[in-house]
Length: 125
Image (cartoon, rainbow, N blue to C red; front, side):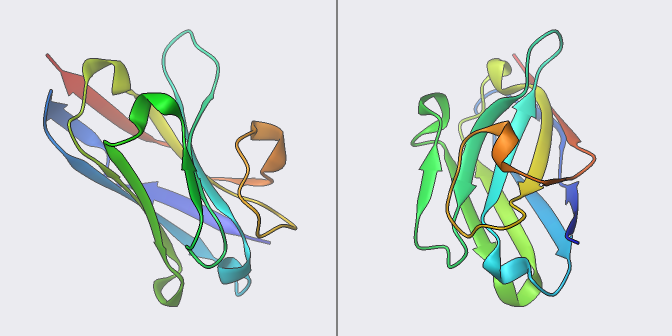
């Protein structure tokens, strides 16, 4: 079992920055690909970023490319999402997720087995 917990959300002005953290429990963390998703009110959960087991490969949704950076520190069992140049449309609950049986990056909700509780990010204009 892999358990994940997000933190670092909050209220920020447009153009500002925020770093989300996802702390994972479970000895197999380093072998799991990880992902960040977000869900705005009235919308379906949306893929944001993913990173493979070693941190050597990552992929982002087009809307955040050049602004967001996903990284991981396996020694600390933690994955991060650095968010720069935030926009009001980035406002959402952000979820961290872990794949259950794969170290390969993936962008679909169905590819992830373990989910955090979410952390709210609000970007004001």
